[in-house]
Length: 617
Image (cartoon, rainbow, N blue to C red; front, side, top):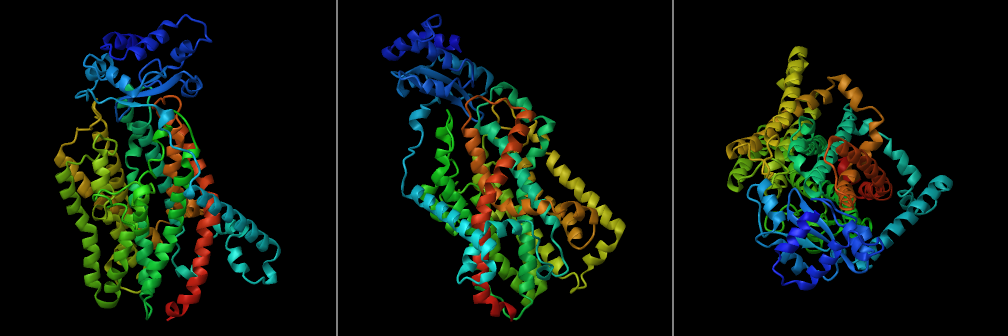
């Protein structure tokens, strides 16, 4: 790096005299006394590409200014300078965007189509957000304080005065930490579910949210972090040991399947009564999802900037930056379309909740047609919900030339036009919906599928084929990820192959998990049920919704607080992933105890008083 700096100084055009003069003092101070400020600047400067130097030490020097020079991303190619405060951004732009810039020439030799004159200069300390208190932060502080007080009062009443019938105590007891902790380990009442038990879905939920976190950790390290072994990244990211990460988005599809299944089962059950409570169904869903979503979004929007520091900290808050302009889209669940039909990042995983809500909007009408008018038309509608995304995805992929690799250069288009759009992602939900109907009607309809599943050999064959298909869908992606190229465009697959894959993979994945989950729900594969319904899963499953909502913020905080470059390896992935899982679950616990469970209890109290007569009929 010292050689590069000397070359840069020698190649500059002399229009930035003061900056060059001071940098000359820095470079010539290599043998000076350690207490010399210029010597410290030299020591705290990064010594190689992607070496972040000593950010905090540099900012302690009054006459120094830490600068981050970005040449290319993703992945990041940067140098970190602890330079004189006399150097401005324009000075650095003039130095590093010169036609004979040796660093750009070097990168151009190792990265095809390297974008010269595309250097970005950051002064992290100056670009960090203002940490002054504002109305939003004060409001959230008051809200958190009130929740803590309510938790204290509710717990006290629950422990000491529960049997004394204090007027209005029911509302306070909704916030009882003691009672809510016990609720975490309680399973659903069989009276509500009939003879069907869904406990094995607890294990599925926990594994899915962990799979999602693993995928996001790897994406964060490989795309949004500074990698020390940057020239090894091409081989590291394409290693077979990373293959399971590629399929992380199937965990999201599994969650869509579960949502469709539960919606299908309980709504078709409610439709068996005389009167269907349309208002209650939609209102209950909206309240159940929105309260926790809004709380977590506002909490991190208000406080995230106080939770870390470092040379990359000015980039934190990427999951709330759009909230200033588009907060209202999260309340209407159109945040996956607004603005410009691309969607926004307010709320992190808000796109998933938007899609799930959009799927749910059409669920009661479809099931109403199925239950009250014609089962045949109902099945056709569900079939269309499963098949239309295949055609829509093919059209979108071809029109925008999308690449299926999630960490490719075209990653943003993939997310904006495909990943967050309901017309491309509805297939798993439709299969879950169909399975919900099948499970509910197993003793009510003589459908032939029940007879097929009773044949042990056929059931075993279906299980083996489904398991093979799931693994094939995950591991075949290795052929695309194995050839990232030096420009990280992952262009091994042709556009036709990308289109075919994107349009078909979710259908076959949904069919495969349905072929495994449906027999489990009908009472087959008891060994799977015993493993995934073990009681240890239950409390973690109750926390998964909150964990899912906050995990991106936690990951963002941890990695944007990076002070040294990371070494990309399996050990780095594991040593990052495990602590993040632990932190997310511990962070989710008070949110669930003081927000999610109390909100559900209060909603239930009002629901029973307002809608109970309609539901009973």
